[in-house]
Image (cartoon, rainbow, N blue to C red; front, side, top):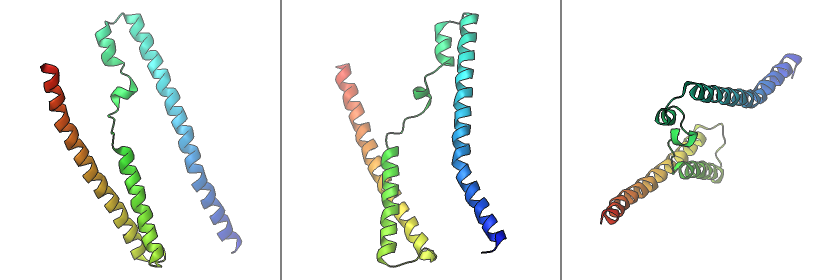
Length: 141
């Protein structure tokens, strides 16, 4: 490699390594700014003597704002398993990564993982919906 190619390779590596560092720094700034805004909001609420019901609407806990997805871990795990099975299939079939079939098999593994995740989530949510009316009937009796 000549000097130009070496410098381009060095710059590419340096820039690719700086992406997570910048992301972590920006997330830190974001969380500090959010805490400052929350403190200012609480201070303004205390100074203005707002009723407690309005305060509950204005200041919610972060857990309540986010919709909890109980199946996100299952989905991620099955997608990772699909990628692994696709990579294993590529290894057993001796397909190199420069071949287009390599990426197609990996994509099929991801698709299979997502399909299995959907089926499991559907069955579990259907089961939970059936249990909820039964629990409601027990509490009303």
